Structure formats: structure tokens, C-alpha cells
Length: 493
Length: 95
Image (cartoon, rainbow over the protein chains, first blue to last red):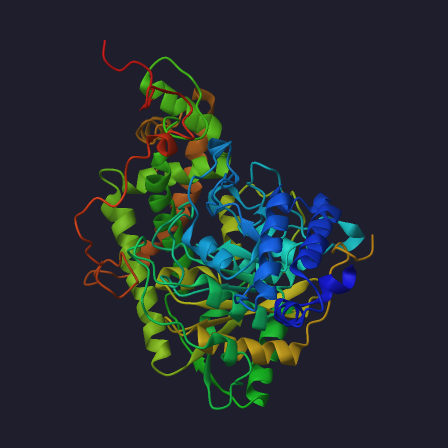
């Protein structure tokens, strides 16, 4: 069945419309692929019965000529999206056994478009991490392997989502991105990931991490699939007060529009210590590709770039400490019995939350506490404005920005680092877009010396996802990234 | 602004997280590592800068003040760790 797995979502949709394959056949192939690659621990829950029932309905609609945008496309859902009647845990013990009685807006949109749910995907606990190693279900593994076949992290927090697309155990997956959690794993796994503009996709029904930064987006095999999935995911939603009613552009057409006449900025502050030489070379190569395709490359300055990470590590934990206050052992999830109500809260939360989540709750509580609020939280909000103003200034003269997606390729699972700050550096190129609310696209563009994927990132103006797909389409065509990982379904054992 | 064991105990209490005695010092060291790094922000002049809380660029919409949901006690209690007679059950809080 590996030929079925070779089809992109756009190709699969055409084959389904032409009746040369059925949604049931395609779904069956992906369920088998997920079982074949189970050792990667990408899925925390497979829903084969659910999937086959959805596929049968998709086949019925296809037969009647009523196919939706994603009719019959097998899709995996990050375990941060509430799915009606299907366990949702945010990969945390504290949500052990939680079965939402409602559906997130984004997944409801996807099912309305005809997509088929294969299962729920592994991620960092409450999306806090950059390696998918904080999950209560254990780490997800990348289908790519390092030297001597070492297991590599898929990145995070949407590690299961990126790994599943690369391993071909889902044709497309949902991710969420608070500081890079779609773009960084997409880059590590050699797939395409978009963090849309803040407000583009509804946050309703997604387990909250940092509400002013969180945004859902698509992870796919190629750029055209990504635009298609965004079109199905995005909507204005009255149940999310930060959801936008700015209409989505024709993103599917944008993929083939080219970059002739576009001005692309190259931010000089994105040259950092600790960047791989291969990353620097690929970034230069990307600039050359865009120039050859008719774009004008412009040097730009984003002077507050180096302050983005410390700003993020005040704002994100502050919002997280507030959002995670709801896990109290009373209304849902885990409860650890203790004598008094306060002792029950404290025991439940100490057992239910993992180490990284507890650390961020404590940092967030500290920076919001009396006497420190102005020095930390308010200060960070002010620097956040300066970071946004840097982008506003740059986008007055350019249409998009080209940067590396990550400073390095993926690293081995279990790499021991005592200093949490070192782990934060994975997100150095991705965090600024979250602080400014901008859309960002990660496109696989090459391999490093060890044969591991590297990505380029395109950033754009708010609500201008079309420009990202124009640039992404050109980068994809120029890079002709066809490498596949050994541990994919149907690949070498 | 260095965090010590008693500060960790205080914020742990505020966050309703049980941090055992022998973890207070290691947690304090971790937090100090993060806070020292964050202190880099102090070199940025921000005297006349307004804090940025939302990037949406639109005013928060107002909704009509009306009931849109209800009569779903069973759904609300579907995931409850302990419930009785249509209520959430918590340890005794009034003697």
C-alpha cells in the first residue's frame, strides 16, 4: 500500500474525486502505517474505528459529488485539541482520562471539510518544550536517524505531529505554536509547518498555554497541502474573542504565484553564535534562490531580536501560571486526596504536573507576584511592544522576511542539559513572530552534513499568509527537497 | 533580586504546588538561573513605552448579555473526579 502513502493531500484529493482510490482504502493504509511506525511513539491514541466510520461517510459524500476541501484525507490531531468523546490530555497526567464533551473549533472545521481522524498525537506536556521530551507519554521520536542510528528528537512541542507527517502515519496534522512549536519540529522533521497570524485560527477548545501567543496551524508534507489545510482550519469564531474576521486570501493560488517583484528582508540580527555552518550556508542559498526567481533581497534590522527570548520566558510562564490554575482536582482530570481543600490542590498539582510545567508555573507566579510585577511582567510587555515595532518598521519596506527556522538540526533524544536556558535557544528564530503575532512558515530546504533536514523560515505581515506561501512555493521548488527518513512507513527497517 | 528557599515556598503556596522541603533549594537555583538571564531586559530603555498586552489590533468584541447554554448538569459533571447529586465534591471546608 506504500503507493497510497506516496500521494500528497492534493494528489489524494484528486484521486478520490476521480474515484481511482476510496477514502476507506486511504484511511486503512494510514491506520496500518501508524501501527507499523508505533515505535516512534507519535500517537498517544489511535482511533481506527472512528477513522473508518468517518472514511465511510467521506466515501458516501464523494459518491454524491458533495466532497469537502479535505474529503477523505487522513489527519492526526495534536493532543492539545479537545475532541468530542475522544480522550484529550495535553500529554499531562493532570488530564488523565479527560474526555471532552465538545469539539474544538479548528477540528470541527476540519471534520466539516471531510477530513478523517486517525488519532491523537504526542506533544510536550501542555506544549511546554522544544523536543517532545516533557510528555507524560514519553518522548516522540523522529523518523530521521542520527549517526549510528541514534534516536533523534522530532522537536516540540508539536513533535508527534511533525514526526507523523514525516513518517507517513498521517497525511496532515494539526499543531499549535506558542514560541515555535509548529515551525521548529517541522524543520527538524523535514516537513512544512505554518504558524498563522494570531487570530487566524480559533483558540476555542484548544488546551491553553499562553493565550496571547498560542495559535493553531497546519503541518503537512508540502507547501500546497499546507495552504489547503489552512483554508479548512481558519475561521472567524465568536467563541474566541481574539479571533479575526479579516478574510483569508486565496492561499492555495499563492503557492504557484512566484516571487517576481517581491522585496524580501534578511534580518542581520539573526546571525547568532552557535549556529551550524550548514544553517548559515542554507540561509545564503535561500536568498540566492529567491533572487534568481525575481525577488529583491534587502538587508533589514530588527534591533530588539536578542531580547525576544527573555521577554517570552516572562510572558509565556506568566500566562501559563494563570491558565493552569484551572487544574484543581475538582472538575475534571486527576485528583490526589488529602486532608484539606488546599492540601488536595497542592498534592494534585504536584503529582499531575511534570517538572518543566511546574518550573514554568513557579516562574510565572513569581513574575506576577506583588513587588515583582512591574520589574518583570510589565517590563516584558514593554519590550514586547519594541519587538513588534521592529517588525512594523521592517514591513514598511519589505513584503516578507527570510530567516533560518532553527540554529541547528535535530539532536539526540535524552541529551542531558542542566541549564534550562540552553534548551530555550531552540526557539531563538521562532519566538519573535509569536510576540508580534505574525505568521511564520517553515519549509524544508536542505540537509546538513549528517543528512538531517534543515528548514528556512518566512515571516510576513499580519494576515498576509499568501506572501508566505508565495515565498515558500519558490523555496520548495528550488530546493526540491525529496529526501525521506529511513523509519517512515513503507521505508527501510 | 535573588530567590531563596523561603521565596520558593511562598510562590509554591501561591501556585498551590506542593514543593517538598528538599526540593526548595534546587528549585531556587533553577529559578535564579532563569531570572539572571531574564535580567538582560534591564538594559533596554522603556521609559516612554506602553506595555503591549494584545497584538490583534482590534477592540475586543462585546457580546449580548444573554444565556446561550444550560440544562446540561450531566455533561458538566461527566469528567468529575468526585461528584454527588449533581454537585462537585471537595474536602470539607466549613467546620
